[in-house]
Length: 130
Length: 136
Image (cartoon, rainbow over all chains, first blue to last red; front, side, top):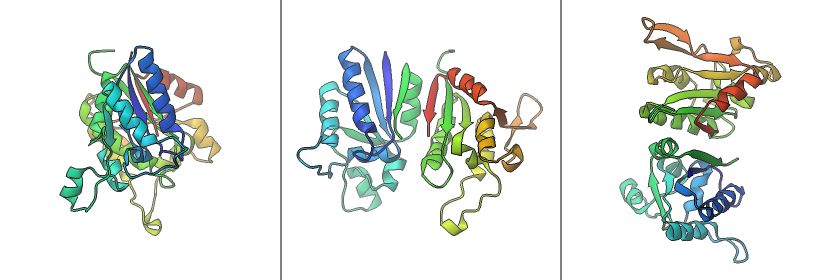
């Protein structure tokens, strides 16, 4: 089965991104496909490369970056949700005249159309959120 | 399911201004309208407050996005399922909601109400009938 995944709650405050991460690992292990993960609402904050969790805690952003690399996952951060929460990639930072960018490796910024397209193409769309 | 047309249901469960969910749900609906899918909206729990008329957000400094609902008909978003029990539990009636309308192009562009009040069990049927349910 082909899954589309939505992560719509922020990291650490909510377990949603952990649950999504665990679901995806389990689904892939069972031979399913995950066509895209779409980060929306506070879920966009998963993608910051500037978070520094305590060493004995899980490293949420790094886990996603590693998972994306291992399975060639498409991790998409909603641009509208990201911009109002201070999440920028290099291109957007340059375009908006900001002096920093913070999107981690393995994530890309794109529009809400990617969420709709994912939902059309997937057999199931599953939301992990509040 | 015919070709690439899917039935999308956007479920609105939260009051309009206490959190960003209602506003960001509306942003998805507006973008999604460009994809020519079969779109419905559902309003339940505190989500029914999103449709109340006479919203005035000036004093709280937030943008009043409630007029947007009445424009959704132009994007062929014409089915607003509102749960009766959620209205009842909050002391609301249909008269407290905006009179959201759309122009029916199959009926000489007559204006028709978009809001369809359904019971909780009918709402379950509406949800079961969808291909994609996005909940906010």
